[in-house]
Image 1 (cartoon, helix red, strand yellow):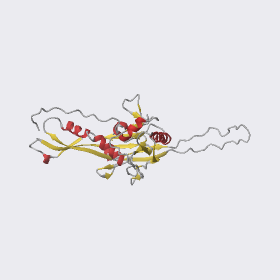
Image 2 (cartoon, helix red, strand yellow):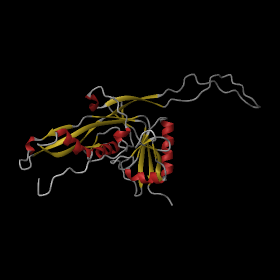
Image 3 (cartoon, helix red, strand yellow):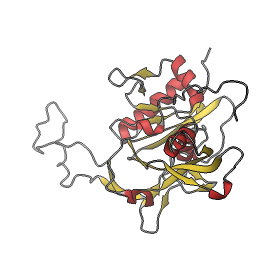
Image 4 (cartoon, helix red, strand yellow):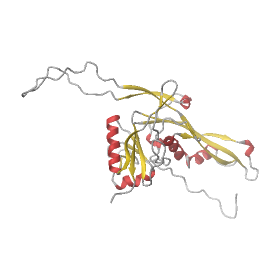
Length: 298
């Protein structure tokens, strides 16, 4: 409401970097049907070594010729994976004079959207219900009635709190062994200072603003990452859980605006509205967890 002081524009909102959406690949959807959930096939594992000729000469004394190479190599495990969508929203009072609805809706969502998205992806909770699959903090697998794997159980590589360098090294190693490609390490914001103090974060020279581990995996430090363990429990004071996954992909809708006609306020010439956007995330193969001690050791 206008008063004796002049009306000005407030400061512009600047989103934090390294969000979950930033770290995900964004394939082009064929239509809006992804909002009902998606299915894909992961091809993980199955690689091995062999030799081409069983007639290998063995030099020295006491040597024995090697056994014949395997006739059928181990097959890669094709696993049908699935993911579900969830919606974030923000309610606001919209002036009937001035900015278009979509501009005001985008402004309303911008303040909390990244936090709500990453919190749902970490915990699996949306609207107070466990409906977001897959999510990070999980200690059991879940298949749908068709046998499609919606959720994997995190493979805990370090269950007792350990030094940051040990934790990041173990996650880098496990991603290299289980995935082999560029993965994503999911870090609560509270852990960034510890990782920075130990020189465990490096900036990507080719992608400004992107953070990476010493092993080259991308770091996501999302506002809604709470640091809870695979069973959902909070760690002891001075420790946080980190997770690592294979490559991420994600879809998101345009901002949708819904108004509530019965809320029109004649005194302020505003109406109550809600802005929302739907998201979906999935990842490949690896799903790892490790408990890290915060702070710099003496």
